[in-house]
Image (cartoon, rainbow over all chains, first blue to last red; front, top):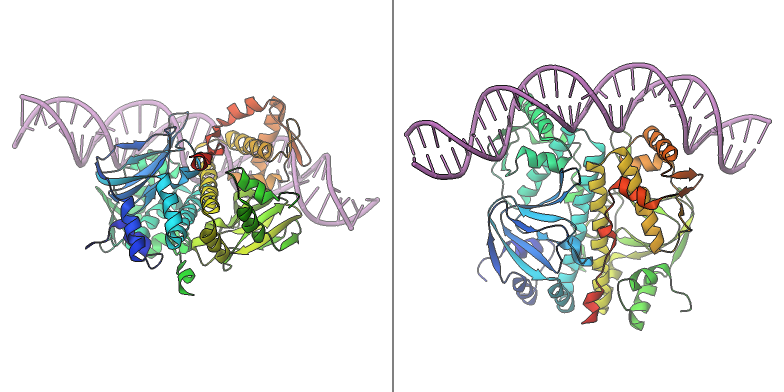
Amino acid sequence: MSQDSCIICHFKHYGELSENDEALLAELEQSPTEIKGDQILWQEGDTAHEFCTLSKGWAYSFRHMEDGSRQILEIYLPGDIIGLREFAFKERLTGVAMLEDGVVCHFPHRRLINVFRESLTLSTIFFAISSHQQALLTERLVNLARRSARQRLAHLIYEMYVRLERTKARQGNSIRLPLSQQHLGDALGLSSVHVSRTLTAFREEGLLLRSRQRVELPDPAALAREAEFGDAYLNDGIDHFFHH
Amino acid sequence: MSQDSCIICHFKHYGELSENDEALLAELEQSPTEIKGDQILWQEGDTAHEFCTLSKGWAYSFRHMEDGSRQILEIYLPGDIIGLREFAFKERLTGVAMLEDGVVCHFPHRRLINVFRESLTLSTIFFAISSHQQALLTERLVNLARRSARQRLAHLIYEMYVRLERTKARQGNSIRLPLSQQHLGDALGLSSVHVSRTLTAFREEGLLLRSRQRVELPDPAALAREAEFGDAYLNDGIDHFFHH
DNA sequence: CGAGAAGTTGACGGGTCTCAACGAAAGTGG
DNA sequence: CCACTTTCGTTGAGACCCGTCAACTTCTCG
């Protein structure tokens, strides 16, 4: 394999992989499927028997509410695994849709069990990834429950800024953010109107500059302060398991 | 083993356990520790190298905010595993405290890896439990982001009502709920004052009766409707893995 | 019985929502 | 390349839900 895929790269972040491990992982990425932006991978209530790896493009999971509004739960970047939540369930608990054109690979739940049988290292990393996703959710929950609109917005943007740094998809202090203000509102529990107001306020204060699909952070540290951002939940480290 | 512990009972819910599996699980419950109500198991920032099984009493995880307020993230019942979230981290991301006197058993992260090595069934179930906890968090997030104070409160109470049914800790339409209104507010992102008002409203409408540590649901279905409660996230089922 | 915690109630203020109209940008077909 | 359409973003006015503060009452437990 000349070039590591997003997933293998993601896993290597947690620890050393043997030849066999890499082969097992590669098996999970056998059937890459091109998928258009705005397309839906699955809906709430669909039967759940497979995971997805996202190799290209952004995606998000969501939930429709009875009043017609929508809550966005997580935003997935290339390299992420989608659908871990439903491993213990027969049905999807949330829908998942693309934010732009991309590529995904499906693999059935049973294949994961096969991985459990074959590789202790991969079992551990899968568990770590699941626990990491839980940490992301936790932080999002705190953000929604306890912070003002300004802080929520600042927090989400800054989180993306940090996550994109990890995947080397950042240029200077500017990131690509393929989310409409409606998306932002749906993710933050705010109306798109208020997102607009808050963004203009940030622009006037020089905290954030937005143009088309890009966001520039003139002073990232100031934005982090505004958000009361604590980055512990992004600083994982399980490598100590593999070093003694 | 004459009497199954909470944990073994919890695991059996997901699938058949071999003799060896039960023995492995029992190993995780070697050192039961009595612990007083209001006592803190750990604080945010403490080093994380072990899980906890809760065998008796209720507990909760929380996060202190800069403004002095507090967010409660999850409520743990006997049989739950605490600290899964931090498997991939060096530090605790949230504090954990008891709601009443109880008993917990600590076991180090490395012991889990040992379980991964020894039992495919247990690996699968551990992963399922982690994914189940993620589902609980997801639902809580939706609740906080999108619902009114009335719905949030109704939702939390009804969730407890259902979870307690599973653990057979329910008497008729009445449950024990060892949470103060302050606790409820901290869990729901509401002020304790507003929790009080909402509870009185529910009482006047005959939706909910609260006395000391008990809550009675005269009409559970009505409460579920008020909460727009969808129970999919509590109806797990991975047993199909073990049946073919 | 006394003290402290927990819960209740009222008045007031503020952050965010809704509705609505308008403007800007982006995609579409001729 | 232009008119058209549609989505997306901006701005204002008014309303509402819930937070804060504060006083008071009720429980709980030593």
